[in-house]
Length: 225
Image 1 (tube, helix red, strand yellow):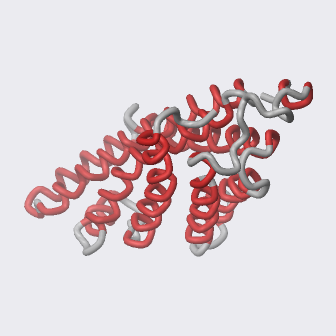
Image 2 (spheres, one colour):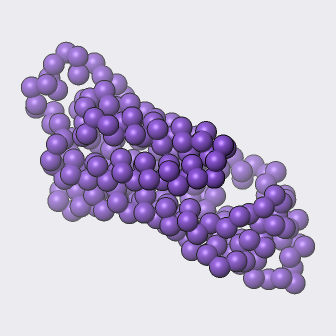
């Protein structure tokens, strides 16, 4: 199922490109935060930190549209994967938005050097407070959302067949490989960027499966999801 109006299709296509670009910019400009809150505030005061924080926060809006668009593609062929994947992805964007707002707040803290010790103590309290649950929601929601939607894309052959495995590879490289190499985060951004851009023509109506296609009506596909 495709977005029902040209404007919605265009919004989906723009978001599929804008989301990975914004995340990449955020990654490239992110400073080394060090180990503690004091190091973090020092890093946030450096050049590029503001751009990194703002682009990460802004990226959540097109990323939300990305999850909705992919979920809509899978409604006819994988309804359960569509529903749970979209819901998880939306929760992930919500959690990341809250976490991104906290990061943006630190930009203001970093400028007030006279109150640095107070802000360091406040950040220490925040990192052990229930607010950090939003960061967990952002992480888990994003992982589960992409995992389920990637499964749906691959099993229903919606779009290029490699997109689903590419999304899984992104999850492995981003959340496992990043613990082994600092370069993994750049590779993961490249992988998810290519996967999402490959879906641009699909949401535009080229290469997408429709509910009335003969192969969608087959018993095998009807049971997917």
